[in-house]
Image (cartoon, rainbow, N blue to C red; front, side, top):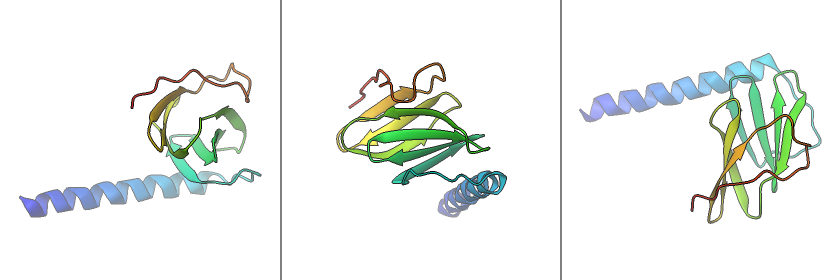
Length: 112
């Protein structure tokens, strides 16, 4: 049984690496943002720059940006339109709404 779960875990890691390599092959994004954390979901790439989330499409166009709150450490895209930001003591849910201004703060639902 243990061998089976190790094989499954190895296959999952290989799938994840392939997904990232595929996304990176499709696009090159030049940005002034630093990347404290990166998440890829289908045609979206999210960069966490300090306490700001910037989301790009595979063409390199910024499609969404928002402040993520103090202490942000990681970002995880969970769908085309949602993300989670992990901070020092909270997990915040963000809806990626293209109708908002890039600097407008998104309402968060803290799940800590």
